[in-house]
Image (cartoon, rainbow, N blue to C red; front, side, top):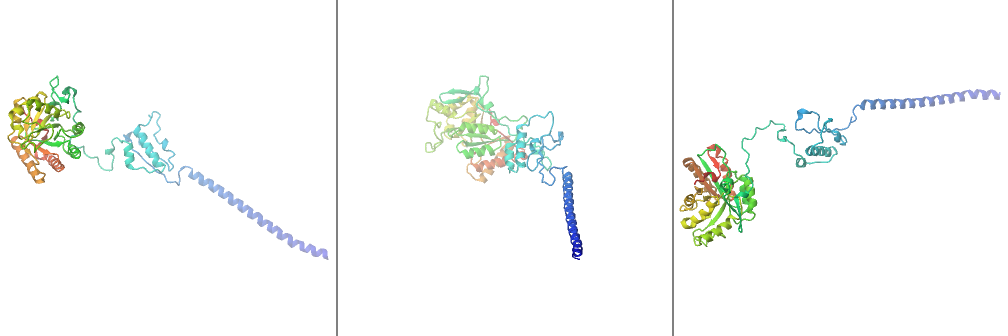
Amino acid sequence: MGAKIAAKGVGPIGDGQAQEEGRRRFGALSVAALLVALVYGGTLAWLLLSDNRLAGEPVIHLVLAEEDPAEDETPLVTPGPDGADIADATPDRPDAEEPSADEQALLDAARRIGEGDEIAPEDVAAQVRIVGAESVSGEEEAAPDATPAIRALPPVPDPALVEKTPQGLLPQIAADGRTPRDVYARPVPPGTPVMRRIALVVSGMGISESATAHAIEKLPPEVTLSFAPYGPGLQEWIAKARAAGHEVLLELPMEPFGYPQNDPGPYTLLTSLSAEENLSRLEWLMSRFTGYAGVMNYQGARFTTSASAVEAVMAALQKRGLLYVDNGASARSLAPQLARDAGMPAVQATRIIDPVQNPQVIATSLEVLEETAASAAVAIGVASGFPVTVDALAAWAATLGEKNFVLVPVSATAQK
């Protein structure tokens, strides 16, 4: 009987263990199936995305135009986010040459962008000169500027036009007959009208650095600049003036009424000195710099009324191939006529434009110049180099073309 009880108990216990083992096997299979599904799903996703190795990543496309985009439409640079492919961005051509310095600078700039470094536009401009960049924009190409480019005058001195002396270099007529007044003058373009001409001379240059620089940069190249002999670094200023197209004159200080209380400065030409002494002073003044086409008096109301004093000076200037410009301050000046008598081209100013620094006075003087040029064919104005005068002259000169006047250098008005 005991054996039967044990046999009956064995049945139920064995069935429960079998059920538990079945559940464990089913769970393991489910986990295995899930893992297989994940592996296959990951593989499929990888295959789908492998067509673009940068899928899902931000991409920067930087296209830099070449000089002739029509020849090759391939972007010059297409870097990825890490900049790794920038070195391979140059179009792959068997006959490709090494990049130029400008092209290499562009590539370097692109590499810096691709690597995440900041680069300012002005830094790129400083490194790279892009040919034709002016016409590459979102707007229509602007029409060419009808204004002719400023013509720089040749450097000075011409070795054939200088004489070495104990004082320094002095102007002279070349062995072939060329003269400083011709070689150093600003040429007048062929076909320039002979009527309604206006010339401007701005004096006192070389004393104030800021005023001299302002006049050189602001005034049109047809304006003649007259330099005082006392300023520092005069030859450098002459080079800058001529590079901007301006012909230049040398100012000669001459005795005014009221001398010595009214003193034009050292080495002033005086009626009380002998001709030899004045010529010695004249040579010192002429040696201060080279490249001037002629001279202009500074003050001199008394000196220019002395025929004997003026004749000696004009004879010396003529031998050196210069022209003479009288500033027009004295109506009694004999200098223009005595210069012409000596065979030297000379001219006398029509009007001093700014006897006082007053905008209305300057405007009136410019109106008078226009009236004179309209009636007498030529008008010559002399002005100081004060910025207010220079600005007024520059603004006024810009209107002359529409009024049918032509601005010329003063050398173009000189007559023998």
